[in-house]
Image (cartoon, rainbow, N blue to C red; front, side, top):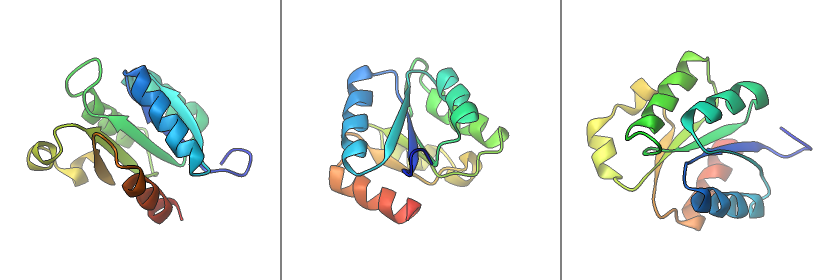
Length: 124
């Protein structure tokens, strides 16, 4: 928590997507931190201790989102972690959510009402 608001870390190498997520999530009343790579995301996770993480599946490397999820798990992450994916069902068929410690996956383009409802449900 920061300034009485829950903190969400968004990780994506697409600055337009990061800006859109930041604007949208801040409009829901949360504080947003951003990172433009999996490496930067892990560093910010460790230093800032966000309440939730949303990371793109395909960043600088094809599977860097799943790699970040594994690194977060190894770092003792105990907050909800969601991946952003344009491949949606293919990810569900090829990755084990439990193995990655994922809470879920948001399909791109992200639907604002689904994002808002999910954040409220998961964060309270």
